[in-house]
Length: 162
Image 1 (cartoon, helix red, strand yellow):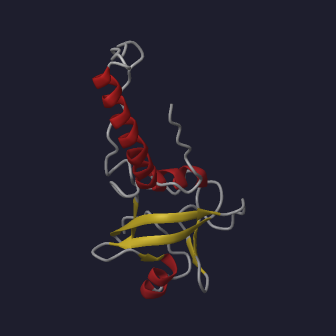
Image 2: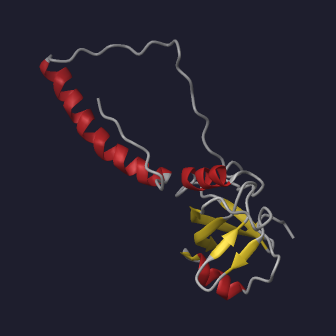
């Protein structure tokens, strides 16, 4: 039996890589066992089987009114594909990595605050820190570099179409 723990900062891509590596060895050992007769295949019972629907691009849209932990989990679950996203000044902004902060709430959901080397965003529970983003048509970058480039005005927020 192989177990794989989900670490606090794992993305779906991180987990897939580890599971693929572990699974390849398990698959080879299983095939060898079936081939030499030391393992016997057993059909999976139909009872209790469920299907997980594919995550869509719309599922990957971040709702800033959700609690910070949910926002973090959406970003991690959708990275690298289909890619968690929000809207800033009418354009998509891909969210690659964010950090959860101690429970302090200063910002309304989606409102941005920029420090010298940090970008904070409000959620439904408490503030989070944007660490890596990817503006539409650009390469991934540190959120602080993105914020300096777009010159965020006080009170600007993520998630608004206009």
